[in-house]
Image (cartoon, rainbow, N blue to C red):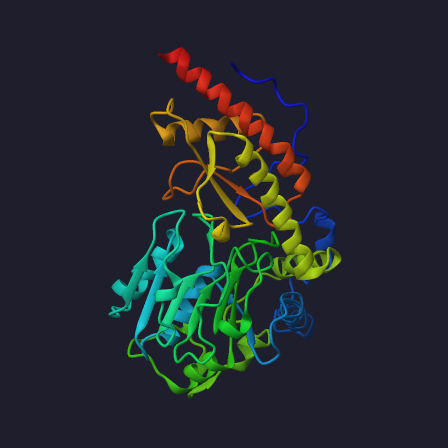
Length: 384
């Protein structure tokens, strides 16, 4: 029997896991101060880029001796720059529990051709972190955007490690507590937790990572767009706003507006609280409804941003088709856009719960998922 149509709709149906919902106070007029048509190397452009770097440091609590750079090609560009510049000096351990982590494994093993030790886990699970050797260089994602699994803490990373920890934190930064003393390279993209516009990535380097850059030269050639050193020294300009390629000043302005909004809700602590509240609204429904499960079985590793759900009902014979039908029904009703599981992930739904999403919208969404589920189950029964 189909449930009654829910009375309340989400005010904002945007639950995409990337690009993500913009801050709830966003208006195009807020970008009016963008220095369009000006050189990014003019004083005004440099000031904006510097403000983006230092605003990132302030909101995330990044140590003063860490370098922060704005780089091309989003989080992907930042991770690739780190791997191509830093890997090869020591043995490497690659950790993967979702699509993007698997991509980094492919690049290191097949493109850089390093004899890396690879540890993987299925979607919804995480590798045994107690077995990871941080005297090797370790590459991993903090939060699996496509699997809904996150690293619970940094306790497994040795304080006196010999290797570098290279962390893709694109759906964790601004929503989860990153232990900066345990991380040597951190990357993320603007279009994730703060809902910024795409194209640019952030590359954050510890003093240990800078030391590696200045003391090690990879055996492979580096394209110009990847180069972070010149004459054996770090190109400091990259970490002061002199970007490697031309940035979009409109996108930079949008990021500055997002940082201002982040400050207005209490900075990092406020953002984490908002994401936690959103994830909790999903969890309440999962606990109540027998056919809905979190893809990440262990509560300690469940993401508070990219919450991945699966359907568990014996009446469903084709999980992928059923999940697509539910997502399509929700979109047709205008209550949830872009909420299907990632193409390589198990079939289901993926609800973005980062801080730019309002908890009231998540709470309003969940009855609609119940409604859409029952509607599709009815369709299956009638088709028999």
